[in-house]
Image 1 (spheres, rainbow, N blue to C red):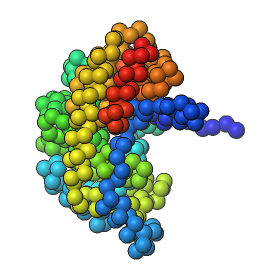
Image 2: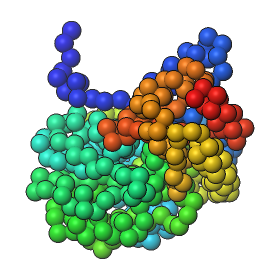
Image 3: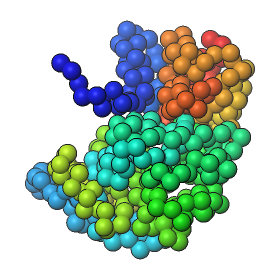
Length: 384
């Protein structure tokens, strides 16, 4: 059987491949410390789980409108208005089964074949995968360690052309933990303010910032109606497996994105949406506790990585990832990833899993216990 040609352009997310290798080693009896997967190691807060159970018992097990339950869309609009300092309405919200559909549908609805999309590299691999899949041109902007893994604005200016249709931002950033400051974002906005360019702003880690406050490009004058904000519940409420996310966009494009939902998944799980209402309106102390625990782990892993000969790690300012430079070890990224997995029992991700400009780096998720992080550092030192 011959697959469609477009399938050759479809990438993957290496984290799941490494996870599969690590699970195979565990099945063979080897202990593995998991620092490769990007999900909180906490349980979903009980009030959220109870809301889902209650919704199941009350019969919320049927279809719902493709853009999402009206009450959840209004809850999201209220939440986004409060956290972004803007006025959002429910008809600017589309609920989706996770954050990835926001990326896919936004690119599919807006970008034509041969249009150009500027995206961060190293960056979340699905950006590049989706751009290539639809036949557009993926234009990477290198994120440089010396710039704190933010955009180099002079590099950015050179990449913007008459064919640029979309710019993808991600702050806090996966895989580096870098954060775009308000000044960074204002400079980006200044470059494209007079051009017909959309912005896909991936803000899935916006509540996991350790210094300063989150600033969305949608808050810049003239950018609210040309920005699609991606957010969700996976990272704040430990709900990765619930598959729940949302996009916030102007009300003219929202029905078209909803039509893509209709044509692909029909709608997002109904009782999960009821739980998402509880997530946003219920107690938020679990989010605060999680952020403070990640802050403490951040100090441990960065100090530990910097104590390993050949490693150099800048302090990440958001999310739960560290991105050490490993060039002085003499290893290539993929080579060291595999060496640490098979010889040290420590699962990490090669920087090249996030694009060509990730060579010379590894990503370690510190969404694991303090004890396991310390043990991982010890094992890495032993094998190196």
